[in-house]
Length: 74
Image 1 (tube, helix red, strand yellow):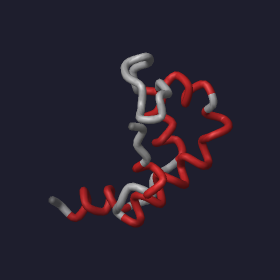
Image 2: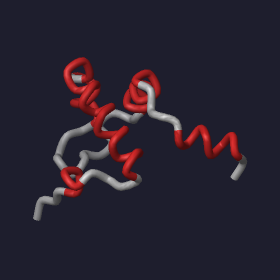
Image 3: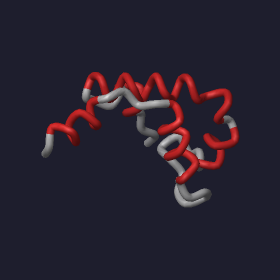
Image 4: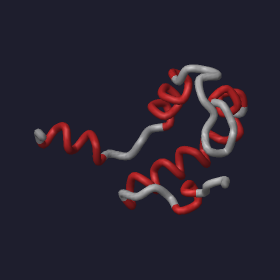
């Protein structure tokens, strides 16, 4: 991997970048573990965007998925 590619992977996620990917996802394709379709997250974007950006940034910084996102329903 080039230094430039590595630097791009290591830089913080920007809000516009996260917005772009959330709104590119196909609606009603498949629910997440929490049972919500991406439509829900797109609909409440204005409410959740800061928290989602923080969660993604924290996961990227720690190089691990946050423990709270590992929840399963049996």
